[in-house]
Amino acid sequence: MKSALADLYHAHVAERQRTTELALAETGFDRLLLHSGTPHTYFADDQDAPFHPTPHFTHWAPVEGPGHVVEFRPGKRPRLVRFVPRDFWYEPPLPAPAFVAAEFDVTDAATPDAVWAAVGSSGGRTAFIGGSVEEAAGRGIPAEAINPKGLVARLDWERSYKSAYEVETLAEATVPAARGFRAAEEAFREGATEMEAHHAYLAAAGVMEEQLPYPTIIGFDERSATLHYHGKRGTWAAPGKTMLVDAGVSVRGYGSDITRTYAGEGCDPLFRDLIAGMEALQKELAAAPRPGMKYLDLHVRAHRLIGDLLHRAGILKVAGDVAVEKGLTRPFFPHGLGHFLGIQVHDVAGRFADREGTPAPPPAEYPSLRTTRTIEERMVLTIEPGLYFIPMLLEEFRGGPDRERFDWALVDRLTPFGGIRVEDDVVVEADGVRNLTRPELP
Ligand SMILES: [Mn+2]
Image (cartoon, rainbow, N blue to C red; front, side, top):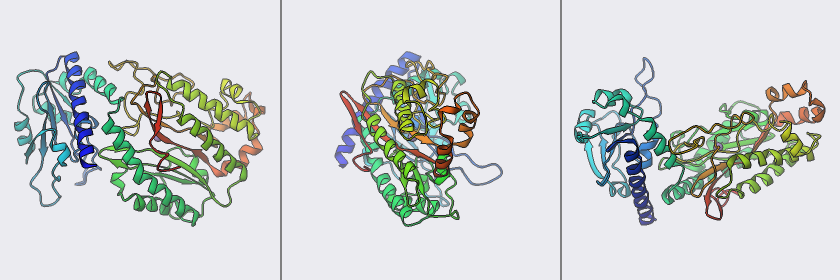
């Protein structure tokens, strides 16, 4: 595995060199500095927020910690200048893994001054990418060369096409997450609280909170209808009648993003049927992406399938296509079908029309859709249809012109069970998709 990983990473870095050389040429720069970031210290405190490196830095080098710089010049071997302070309060960063160190000329520097001295100047036009804008300006980088829009857009665009190294890293990130899901389900069935299910997830995945790509969403009953519920009550009535778990694990800076919904004892049989219906339609949608399709079309198809499910259950009195046309599925499914996945959970360039970063916003009726792109090979996407009973969103329909098309007694009966979401991570291939989640978590 070690050498397989090294080979994949070697090809990944070669691809970064090729695409970055092109982006630099297009934008008139001849050197790029990628800075891993500066910690955020809380106001009037001596503690830092959890550190998240600059994603563009991670794209080149999965090296943890602030203050590092990757230097790339077309035609030259890339350099990694690591910030390794002499410190006895905190553990200094560990050496870069061998497969990473093999691709760079690596220099260690003990102070920011030493880092910048090692970086030196190129005599040409240097671009800087990273959140440490003041530091870059203080080191003499002109404002127009700090996070230049045209360059960042092109590098973001390239990030929508995953290398084999990235795909395998994302696949690897689903393995511990799947163990976490099985443990959380078991805890739920044994009567655990939301917080206990969360702890079961962490323990089985073998990670600490900081190794999660995003805080776990573990909601029972009506709390599962809060899309990004983070409460994880430890004192709330357990057992839950339903449980929604949306969680991932980070590996080398890439996170999986998976959701499952479970019915427990005390769950309404009709809600249980809805879960089964959502599982089935999600599987169909997750297998559907093909190069050339528009992600928006898949999203609209999801609305139609959910409309049909609501119709079969008697919650809507019209078929899916009519429901979509009249906007009746929107209160039940208020988010997008999914998004790009990579270093960022909601990965970049989902709403780009081109590599220059021209915006391609979603249509007015689906404002939350995060991906408006045409599907292409090597894109990694989540497919995550949802069906929720959210009183705030249903309110306006209850008194609206289409109120007769809903069975409100059924809506009220099912609201205490919350919501359903099923989410897999898939990579688009030439003639189909590879589901990175299902082999690990049926
Ligand atoms: Mn997601």
